[in-house]
Image (tube, rainbow, N blue to C red; front, side, top):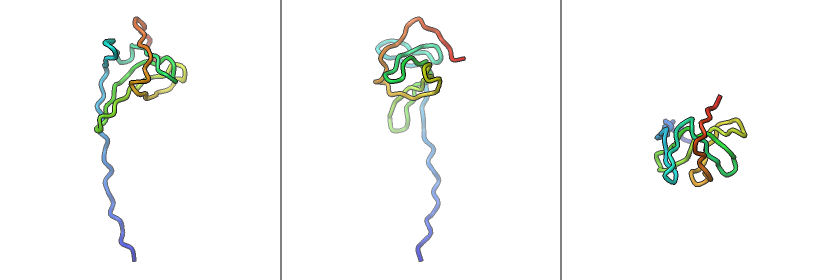
Length: 88
């Protein structure tokens, strides 16, 4: 007869979220700054996230798709200055 497996407690992921970030000396502010992301078009920046393994990404609101998306930092093509649009 096979032995029964012990139940394990799933590890909770550790995420470090910040509401501000700098790309090429341009300051991104949560909910205010628009950026252009390759493959997504124009998006509104909300969070810079780092997990416990050191992987970084941006949480954005895609204006074209009308949904939340996560994108790699190297996919950001442009930061739109002077644009202050908020998600409705």
